[in-house]
Structure formats: structure tokens, C-alpha cells
Length: 436
Image (tube, rainbow, N blue to C red):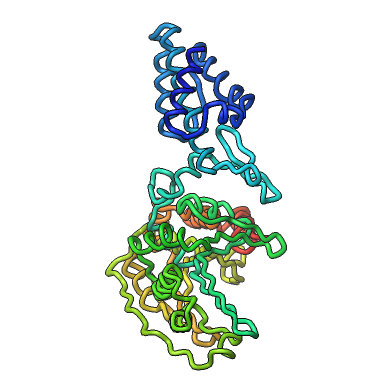
């Protein structure tokens, strides 16, 4: 068969194994069913669902647009060419160890992880693109949105383990923990970075996106936050954490001097030194804190990402004897943070051109809040922003309910029993009620 000769030449030229050694590796029934038959059907059909792959999409498009203009022989040649390219790429990737039989079940389009109890088909081209994941064409998330969301929900973790015989271990991770109902945004973030895994802890009703491989962190995570810097005080954690990554990559943490250097950075990251580590190393000398700076203005995508994590849209219904239906409705948009980010909260006033910042010092952990509760300002300043820059995660549903409530109030329908009941119904779908 002529096509087989072309395939043999192509593969032999690009590999060190004889062609017949690779032919047995191909899942021929799946390949023929998923590719040869659809390609043959192109001769009589103008509709085709293509993969998210530049090469195949362009060729499919070419075939689909040409099948009414060229004879069947030309169409057949194009089909065979596409078929040959698929075989070449399939076998090439097999030689690189991408489709390891003990780990993956695969077909020409998708791979499925056998390490989990559920099937999670992922396009093969996303696996190949792992090292180029910062390419925005592969996902819908804006990089500034991602940074804003990580400012709110992310964690740059360093874990020090010390045993009784003073054996030491240093582990690092970048992770985001959310309610399990918000897992989809973690899948999108994983796709954005192209590395890491999303885990589900059904016992705790949480989903976790985590990256622990230091090379992935070096190549994918750190470059992103250098190009799109964090705005909150979490930037300090990131900078110190990056120093720890550098020490690990250079294997300096294996020496006493290098380990003590790790401890000096560890002392300032997140909650600081654990009691167990302090027991064995009571005289840790903290490293100098790097300087962090706030910009003059906030990026709108960063704002939406940050609000998706730490913002809130609330509807309050209170008794009011002077109202016809004896109940009053009010709206509030707010963002809560630790007091150390007070200056950041003040930037929201400048960004939205409205609102106030308050401090809650009566809490065990001092907090500060940016909030807007003037109805006119919510309509004129807050809603237009989130209509343009959506929240993207589960909180977007809260925003839509909030917006509908605002619309009811604006039309004065909330002054009727029917309108008030509608607001009460929407309120039961928002915030913590949505997570039940």
C-alpha cells in the first residue's frame, strides 16, 4: 500500500527503532474509528467537530471548505496526508514516554488518568503544551485575574520536617484550596499554568490545586508572578518562598548552612516557624524582609480575580415599621482583608471612585474592609465593572443574584410583597447558602 511506504519512511527517519516495532504500539481500532472514518465522511459532509489543535483544525477546515471544489482524488490525498501526520505524532510522543501503559489509558484524542477513582479526560494537546502554558491562547483566564485570585486564595507553602534523630526534609508547594463546588475554576487555573494537579477531599468538601515539583514551580509558577506581581502582602511570602525554591534547586538545603538559610526565610512565610521546628532550632535568625510596593492604580482584571476570592455581595432584609410591608432591603458590596493590607484596601476607593474603608479591631485577628452600600453608587460604579470583568468562579452566580436584586429595588418592586419574596428567594441562593 503506498500510504504504508510513506508512513514507514517518515517514522524510520525520525526514530531509532524499526517501523514494525512501533506499528504494534498503535491502538489501530480506536485510531481507525476516530480518524479514518470521520475523514472518509468528509467527502459527503460539511460539518465536523474538530479538536483544539492548530495543525489538525487548519487541515480539517481546509478539507471541509474544499470538498465541494476539488475532485475525490485530491480530497483523498489530503485525508491520507492528515492521517500520516497523526500516526507520526502519535508514535513520536510514544517514544518520549508520554503514554506510559501503567499510568495512562489513551486514545488518539484523550488520555485518562488511572490514578483517580473518576475519569477525567484531558485533550492530549494540553499535555504536550505543558512547558508553554503561559501562552494565553490555551485558556480563557487573564493573567492579571489569576494573580488577583491567588492574592486572595493562594498559598506559597514551605514545610519543614525534623525527626527525633534530626533528619530533615524540606517540601514546598503552591496551592489553592476552595469549596468542592468551586472545583471548576481550579481546573481552569491548572490549565492556565499547565502543571500541577487538582484533588478533591470529599470528606472535607474541599478541592485543592497543588504544584509540588520544584522544576515546574521554577519554570511555570515563579515566572508568572514575576511578570504579573502580587499586590497584597502575600507578595512577601512569594519572594521568600522563591528564595527557598532556589536553595532547593541548587541542593544547598542538604547542607547545615543551607538548611539554616531555608529556616531564615521560613520564619517569615505565612504563619512562621512551627513549634516542632522551633523545638530543635530555637535560635533561628530571620532573613531580611524584601521590600514590596503597591502600584498607583489596580488592574481591572486583578480586581475581579481578587473579589472572586475575598469579595462579597450581600443583601440585607430588616424590619422597618415605617415601610408598607414592614421590611427594608439594602445592598452591600465588600472586600475583607487582614489589617496588614490596609493600604491595599484604600486603593479600591481610588479604583471604584467610591466606597469606604473600615477597621475591625475587636476581632482576634484585626481586619479591614472596603465596602460600598450606597445604592446609587452600587448601580453606577460597581455593577458596570463586574459586567465587563466577570468573576468566573462560583461567586459569579452570587453576583448575578445580587444584580437581579438591585434591579428589583431599582424598579421599586421590592416595595410589593411579590418583589420582596423574590429578593428573599434570591438571597437564599447566595454566599454560604450556595455551598450547602
